[in-house]
Picture 1 (cartoon, rainbow, N blue to C red):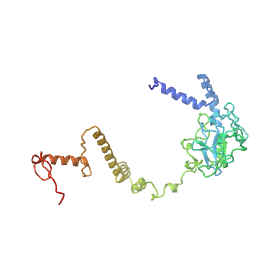
Picture 2: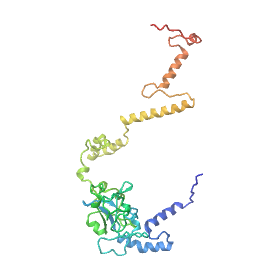
Picture 3: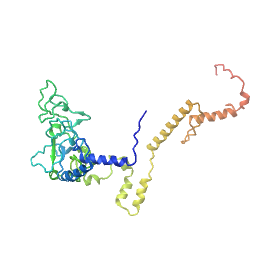
Length: 343
């Protein structure tokens, strides 16, 4: 039998508090929860330095796009997540590039290095045709397959920006360096290993991201261009109304917006609703016939009698009069007349 987990009052607040704790502490507790005093001391000592010395990590193409903005759960070449690497510094290192070694036990990864996926599968090496996780995590990335002579991983897998994987670089930069590149930095947050995430748009790929880290915001000329044949059917349908609203004709604006709000679908959409209704009626009648219940479907709304209504009307005629206008009693009990086969 299924077992259900019952939570008492205040359980929701406890879950939210744990999620907040996990976002702030990350992997720094090494799997053992801090005591309340340790947690408060952690927030007093680590969080201010984290917010001041945040590092932004991105996988950047030659054209300057941040094709992938790294977040806490993003995998490294070593198959460990970004949050499992060293991401907090009391003082920012002066050497460049900034190395973020992996803190997982036994891992030889010396710096965070993003490698893309082909859907949910790892990409293959161009040299040896083996997967990326078949190569070592150390900086050489040699192939681990027996007998393989591949000395380093290189993939020509094409990114959505049109450039191959080997042309991209994983960049670790400070807030000032990222601002100098003209890319957004968002707000200072206390959470661990945020990397390059600055908002929900950071989850999209570069060619879909309408900010300076991607393709950029559309120009005013593009946003204000007249509605044409290539625009959405809704815009084409209400083109005249939208033009009147943009013109700002005083008190008429509220009436025009209300007109759009009260708009009801016609044409093809209404036809689809009608046929869907007929389909559901037919399914219902089939279920009723299977149970032996007589059908009582009304006459069609479009003026066309349905099959059940036609049969019921013909049965009414049969009870009162025969097809030739004679009373039904005169024909009952008599066998049907024989036909000669000739006309």
